[in-house]
Amino acid sequence: MLYAGLDLSRKRLDVHLLEESGATKEVTAVAPDADALRTLVASTARHGEPVRAAIESMNGARFVHDTLELNGWDVEIADAQKVKGLAPLACKTDRIDAWVLAELARRDLVPAIWLPSPGVRAERERARFRLHLVRHRTALKNRIHATLIAFGHPCPVSDLFGTSGRELLNRLEIPEPWAGTMEASLALIEELEVEIDLCEKDLRRLGADHRYVPLLTTAPGIAWILGYTIASEIGDISRFPSPKKLTGYTGLCPRVHQSGGKDHRGPLARNGPTYLRWALIEAATHAAHHPAYNDHYERTKRRLGKQRGSKVARVEIARKLAEAIWHMLTRNEAFAPAGPPSVLVA
Image: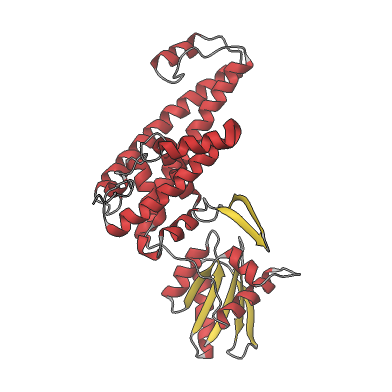
């Protein structure tokens, strides 16, 4: 067996090939495209041994992984943060990184990440693209609000971009070039709304046939869009053996530093998919008013005060939702809040 470490950059893939003994067999670099990767596989085939490779998780790593595996290599994608923890380096270059990954592969210490199937990747792309469009629309709306404030125009309507709000914008006297940029922003908002509506129709249609989405929509705060986003980011629930594992994957747990008798809780870990954290926090905002969570939300908010109480309370509700989601999807059951234990009467 040969062991390859792959360090990917924008225009180059550094390759370090090791023997079973740890001796260097070959050091090279190729372009990270399909033809160059096939040439790499063909050139290493002359050694007559199978190859096990490791590459750090980053944009483009899955393409390299898929291409090399289709051509006969066994490739694992390593968690970049865990690789740094296993092999901290005083001197860091692309070639050294490739050697470190090859050593981890040789010693069977690669902290491999779970790879979603092509179907799950497609689900994630649909949900993430919709969110991408929504963020652009929000940025344009905020820009228009800022323009009105800059020229001393209050906003007396609840929805500036509804019918009455548009009429108000048409009557306002805004000098150039701000009037022109505001008109262009409104036109872009209309186009984005059309695309967002199309995305939401697709998500609703596809979510109806999804094995998780109908269950997720029974939980408080989760409708079709958030349900589809959460389902696509989780992937296969069976890869989480407990609700704590799923909650840890969301990145909504605080960092913990313990030493002796001291226990310090830091900011949120923020590992795992950003979109999953966003969806759970969005759901928690609405679920906080549900009878199952409202008492806990209000207690936390009062205990921590106005400045940060509501934010921390929402994160706690999001963690509780993650635990509930694990039970729902694992047992294939709709949401059912845990009530007080029943009292046996003699």
